[in-house]
Image: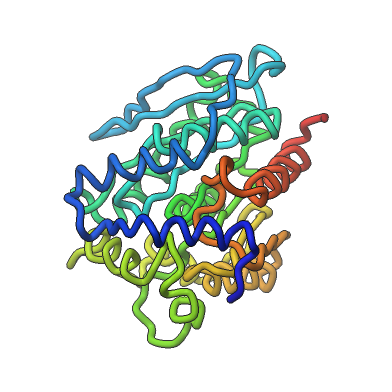
Length: 316
């Protein structure tokens, strides 16, 4: 897959840095991930209000951060619930702070970023269980979070895209309101099926998500209790996607996860879900986090913002 000139320059710098997560301990890898996204994400967009929360579930609590951009009226508001990426092993509220600020400002909505338990301390489907429970909690406690439940979306990137797809399925089954699912280069199939997804071989050496890093994540995110056939682990294996919320699926041409994202978008359409598939050829995995480096990042953020505004009835 050929890269755009701008993306090729970023890839060249990544290769020159020659830093492998495999060479780092888990704590160092997590900090490196946060530090890297801080550099690639650019200056944080000012917010009118940021509120820290704890979601108190039955046997655990999860951190959450609520963003309200300047100009958003007080009181209940259209809301995007966001789950960060990081291979179910890395990432937190800090790693995706810049992404969340950008999306909230561009869409003109409230955004609630939700943390979840990470592997290897808590292997899949723990993160899926957290995402489902957190979404249900926000629906049930909507008044406390100034959420307009009739104008509610979910979204995330990579592992967060996976969790968003899982939440959309759970919301359908539970009868929770959901107007839009935004799946940004999502992982949708955690089975090891040789040759099923050619993009895994074709883009195996394209950073940041190389085959080596995929293996590193895989060794840490699943264990003997993880069933890859469970829809909470591989949402593409759900019996049907019919009845889930309208979707915006974003894929990148130079991404190992491209094919499973493309296939998920096709399955949504086949199951009568209203889906908008936005494909960016010549662009790499993780580009939603590269606002300081890539023009394509601003373009995809505007695409997401437009979908959120349309589905949540937000006036420009």
